[in-house]
Image 1 (cartoon, helix red, strand yellow):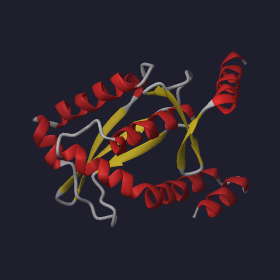
Image 2: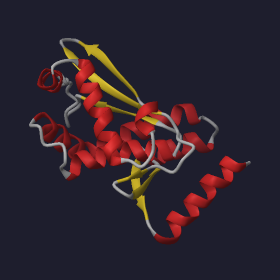
Image 3: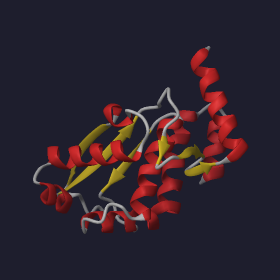
Image 4: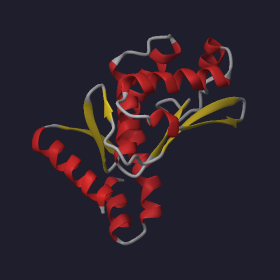
Length: 173
């Protein structure tokens, strides 16, 4: 799938590559996302899997933006966000909790630009976190993540410095 996405992107069909990359990301990252989801429904939000979900949001912001959907199991079965919404009392309160958590884990005002939308799918409710691209470098827990194909990569050392330089060169131009 990743190779198909790259070919579509190279062929000038970047609009078609995005869903292919997202599907590959879901297939490759579903175990981490599902574990994070299970821990989130149990009220454990500080586990490594949930923080990787936040890292994905940061990586989206450092790239071209993106969408993270909560409420889909490993087997692609829609399980919904009802337990979380119920735990926090309402969609608004759940949305505020997500924003506040992202605010505490990142170095920018990224949380202000997020769009958190709820969608009814049959009898379940999905939560979509839409992340716009950021003009600033977004750090998650003081680490830099970027999108590389359908994965989030942590950058360190020279790769991190090169990314920061290129990001600010684009901003200045």
